Length: 352
Image 1 (tube, rainbow, N blue to C red):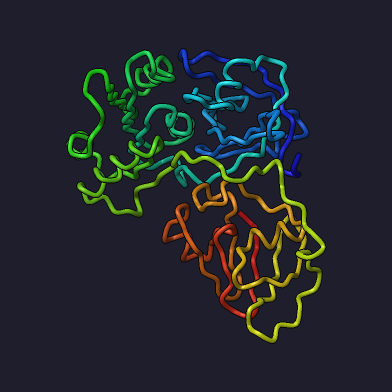
Image 2 (image 1 turned 60 degrees about the vertical axis):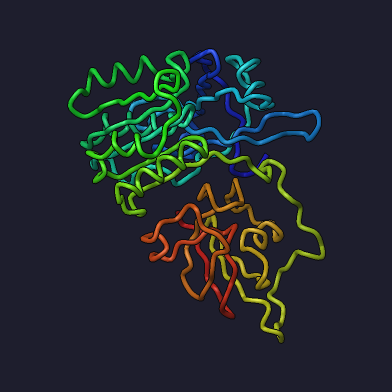
């Protein structure tokens, strides 16, 4: 178990649809600060496996920090999905599940702005957290486009209807059912959302759905800076099975660099400052893990934003970036899993 993960007890299992279950967790008082979260964030769950020891899966929080006493994630079965089927089939109250502390950057910076939210299937999970938070603790209004196969597959159907009645001037839900309208396409979605193009857009769902929404936003000339995506993606690394630093890779003091291929790295994390040699072709996250530093990460593919940190001094570049917007880049933020050094000395701070 990593320093940023804990065993939590399942307090309740809620049947949302035939294919979806919500797992509600009890948080001990001594972990309350560790599990403070923002609307739109996620937990990574460890699911035991006889073949590999464990698999890790990310599930968004559907609960709101502003109106729900306990944390909850919603799991939807996927065809042939080992983890989702196991969680839906055998999880009962009293079970202990190892989970990471809340992570992720998806979600609004504030709760007072007007939002266009779009969800496909179980993509409603982080969207639901945002909806409840804005309605309860903010002043913004929300238009939700929610796409599903048919009426029986609509997760949170009753809860959304209740919220729409209670906040009828601030919440409007637009359902798109494939059984009645076919698959969403960018032209028809753009027509539906034309009146709402001035809002901030937050989109979560399968790749086909997010592609349609991005095309619709482009057709409506919504600036890319106002379109925010949370994409489904399988993890390629298991954060519960961290690599062990070897004698060959562990570095205590920066080596003398006569070739210009190693940067001197100063990194501040968890209240401590460390100094390492940073090879110019090795991502920052790999250097930290190789040196025994428990840096935050999940996907290692630039999508989740978990490993975000600040460049305080020196120059770096990212191989790929799918999580940070232009304003964040201008503030010096970078993704450790994608960052390479470009100057002799670099100072990094994990302060997010």
